[in-house]
View 1 (cartoon, one colour):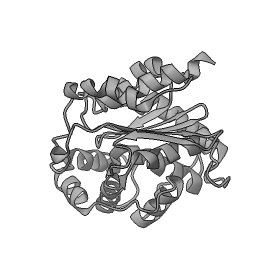
View 2 (cartoon, one colour):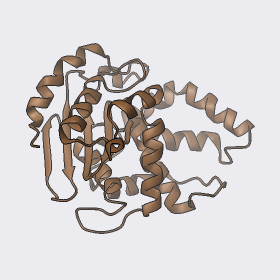
View 3 (cartoon, helix red, strand yellow):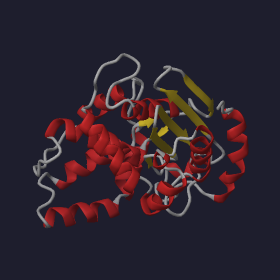
Length: 262
């Protein structure tokens, strides 16, 4: 079935008014909520179909956890209990590679805003430290995390990431294996069960596609044969893009991507 992405964006546009941008991070509060973009990467054909605000750069935020998890698995394996700290530069380089986007950079203003307002993250980090789960220095770990959340990506960047996961860890643009098959499978499972915060269970049923959201308005999804990147910064109460999820649900339905149907 042929899906017209411009028509899909128009159909979902009104959903933007149901959400609001993330205000607890001051810089994100300034983002224009009236944006909706999408990029689909067909792994089989190698074709990309993008529409709307697909080239707008936005803060990756929690979508970066997918990349950090893949990087950790590749470095440490699936069964290690050790806690090793990677530098932000290592994570940034890996992000550029797996998103096939050398233009991904740190937004210093967003990073400083995260650093000033990240008390919840600090409390969690010190709790983990007290429970001897976090072996590394808390301050350095938090700085690395806040920086990875402040990387600037596009819908196409995230579609490329989703396409690597959809293609069993192989970059469809050059045939190079970037991550192991086990890492791709494990990460998609985590995305399906926890990728959309408290609404993960609901949307695993409604959409049926492994997805991870970020409070910058981004969504990365890995469906059968497709990598999908979506951006729309108006969020619901759980922190997920309202119009973005509506658009992803429409794409999944029209292209018959729900993995639970197979």
